Length: 413
Image (cartoon, rainbow, N blue to C red):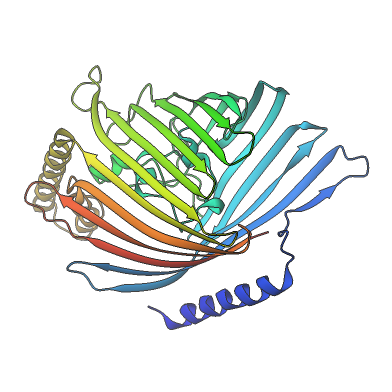
């Protein structure tokens, strides 16, 4: 670990803690707004930053302690001509993450229908459509990395993308290509395919291919009059009409339930990922997952959360990934024998040895316990958690267990 960045981040975290708690009113911070004289246009500026210390330990590997700016984001949003016509652009400026996250316009035609066009999260689970700013734990579950949702370019019709009282719906058509390589990348993780971050602003990437992916979500939310009980159920689905081999699920389905009663919250989500492996006309269930999270609000400042997650990969996907990787590696060995030289070695190391990681994991269990302390609501808070990740290997591979201990300051204004 480099001591310079460590002490800089530590000093920044202390400054945020001391300055933030002393300088800002308890009502919150921002966002800052600019309006024209006749109030026909509006611009809201919001900044979010997370400074995280992460201790990582794994069987058979050296322990690691890192300090990083996990997220540094700037959001510009508002309305133009009418409050019914809104827009948002969100950029990431974290180290090694100069990205365009969101860029869309939204038109509220009436109370029951809105239109959205641009780049945004596809409507796949109420859980993932929520903001990282509201999480009690420091980050999402590993299941969102496999199943998503992630941002794509597309068009959607909805009556509110999330937390609609009564019936809520969203249906849209998207490119089928993830704009980012952070979530919904389960298939390439299994097959050890390289991930392309198409939203990266620091280097050029190939244009997104259009293979239509309709996606939709239907939800119902009940709120008791006294405000102490809220129950929400939802069903999400996404269908990639022409999935790219070894990169995309053909179908994803996720039922979920959320219950909030007084100070207790309960979230349950199931994930089902179908793939076309041997024959495009045959779709099989390849990856499943389940998430349960329980939270307890001790008071207006302190929240506790316990999360359990399970991921299971079907044997036929593991076998296909391992056999395919073995064939690619064998072909690379043959090319290296025929054409030895620096160029062949470089190509071999970058493209062939990478596939040795294909199909190694059979299942993953994740248990996370943590608490958050809100200095100023979700605007300035301190998050701490510990994750025990149990990896079950496939075939003769014995996977290692991992432990992550994370402490994070979040500032939003």
